[in-house]
Length: 212
Image (cartoon, rainbow, N blue to C red):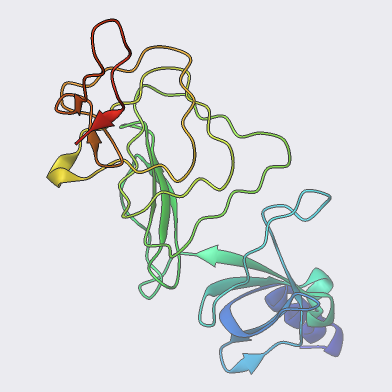
């Protein structure tokens, strides 16, 4: 076989190389691909989007990859990442699109059930400069404490169920533009609305102040 034929065969065999991620560099984003005992130099990997709108997810060590080498030259190579293997297997559910994170957190959408799930995270932050709108039939806040740091406006009724004997507490003044109704007694300081008395001052005179 001539040198030219041998070089041509080498270039053809080197154009597409199966391997796995051997090392990851964050800035600039590069990986090294190991294939059959040989390891590439730092090469770019493909992203879902890498323009003005960008997606970021760095490959994992051991993740399967394909190294594409134009003209069979690994110095010009780029890596395509994202092939399921026994170590990094797929979910297997046909109706679910989602992300499984290294710490066990899950973000997934079940398009058969119409359900979005975020699970296993420690914190969720939503920062919006103007407004956030949530429109639905029912919202359940299952938390030990719910804190509202500024003004709260409620457009309809507020129902305090007092489960377990809990009380509603207000730290400031209450201004009511309508009537206030209570099925039980109302007290102001030690004075009971239902049980207080007055000291008589004689016919035609105002009674004295309320007494306990």
